[in-house]
Length: 258
Length: 323
Image: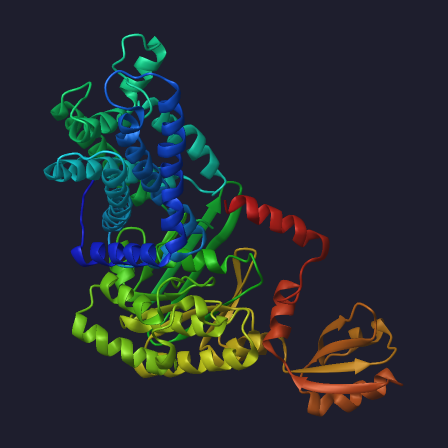
């Protein structure tokens, strides 16, 4: 299918600006979003790290890139799925009747979601640097670039799901059947390159796009990884393009609920 | 060329037809009222005209553009006030308008002036920089009207703009709408439950029931089709008596039998005849035919009446088909 992409910069800016303003005004949501990554990192990471022996480095440091990925995964996918609320509550209607193309709406939402998630990821990264692992400061640039690639594909995925769902009852389904599996199979908490990993886990991890996100982040934060960095990045870019493409089509088809 | 031209427009949801082959033509600058009970198809019609949902069949041209083939062109020319408020709670009134100006590609200088002007018009200047969250229902509606008019649309859609508001706010809102639309020669299509308001405001009216247009025309034309006056007689009267009288067009008995309404031709002339014919009564009232009478006549029920047992199941059916 050929997708004609017509975008208006002003339109994208308008939608992006709205998302950013709303993000900073919902402080409760921002603060709440730090709780679970920190619990994982310090309770789970501290507990497991203290009970088992790992070769070279500590477990908390090992899972830090994974928890960072989890944090942006949750905020990104749920940002996208959140448009189901926008549609129910009619906020999106205003945008849908405006003379801007659906691809403009999609890109505005996409950029808004990436910005929100990146702010959150950045704060967690700083906390991690202070409390856990002092990576070379210059690495911050490749780290942020990799994070941006992860959020790009995950926000796009969320928007694809959100624009194809018609009731908010699907929220729990998305959490249980999309977000948690993406997280668990990604190797955020274990080493996907370990030789005695069960076969099904190896296979599932290979199909999880997030595996490459976690791997890329380990590569730029810890300096160790299973796959070469360029390979991870190619997979992430590929995912971003595929999900965005499906997202633009889905937005084009989206009609008002009721 | 008419501002809005609708030909046999239809929308089906699975096995339920929400809008059934309606045809309407609305001239430029006209205020057109689409009246009907809940679930009659008003909102669905507006949604199709504003390109929010795609029609199942039929054609519609808004400002000369096909709603199916040129949705962007249509959207450039329309402004909408939705039935449910769609202003953003977490933004201020002014920010909502600024967002709208950006979405409609307005020049930033022009936009700034227009925003001030519109805030003034709907009397929200003092509250412009408060979050919409803190606004009352009436203020939200006013903001929404300001937004719908901000980009100077040729056509304005108002879907129940006064639903759930107190009478004073309702009067105010109609006042703004009438002022602006007449001033700028904006074609307006509105839906409402309040027949009196529609009567006072609309140049043309269509009554829609169960997805079909039952009758359309000017208010006077519609009233003229059923008679001139309504005589309400209170007291015990015999049902069969009126059927023989030529001047009595329609007889409606109130359910508990406390009164009877007669649609009568020229009550001034015929009232005495009727009263002498009926015999002893408690009281009598004479008034002009209203749109409520027209509505009752053509649909068999009053506009605000829930249809007893049916309505519950209807609501479930509507609920299911809209998900």
